[in-house]
Length: 265
Image (cartoon, rainbow, N blue to C red):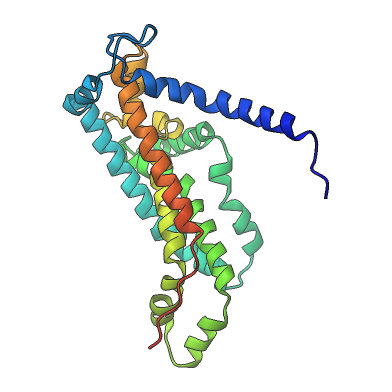
């Protein structure tokens, strides 16, 4: 089959797109090591002082801990509700199943600002005080679909023959889940958890609308950027980018792993 289009031109266009997307991030990372009070040329010299200031800034450290706390709660919510939903979609037939499969994708397809406004209105109606927990619930609602889609796809690869065999051998629902389903989906589940954690850690649209008195890291950075872009901001942003890349790469690798062979009893 002939290659589509002019190969050198396509490669050049692809490189231009990648440069447009990632060159600003590389510039930001470079200036996080600049020995200057300001972000910009000239590059006066290499220093790690801005990273030391990040770890000495109690406000930033508090916001980082808040982000980790919220992201951990989001992961728990996505597993608590997403795993049973994926199993139900795979194993059972019920009215509206096709519609449900499409609805679970809506929170991540819709713009974050829409999800945030809807949840903010709901919290105001029920007189729920805005806090880290409202952020947790809002993000968990949006990111639950990651767990559902990843686990459901793995269960579709597994098929139903092994679960039916376990039932025929006398296994109850819990034993089927523990010895057949969970070993088969654990890599996909781990990958979904890492991806959800990474997305939640630096999410800002829903967080901006649902935050209370305690700020997560994106909100703290936003307040700093409203005054001035400093090398300290570049340093903490570089750390977040590196962490996000690592978590997403590991999560995608884990979610694409082979289904584990269920343990024989």
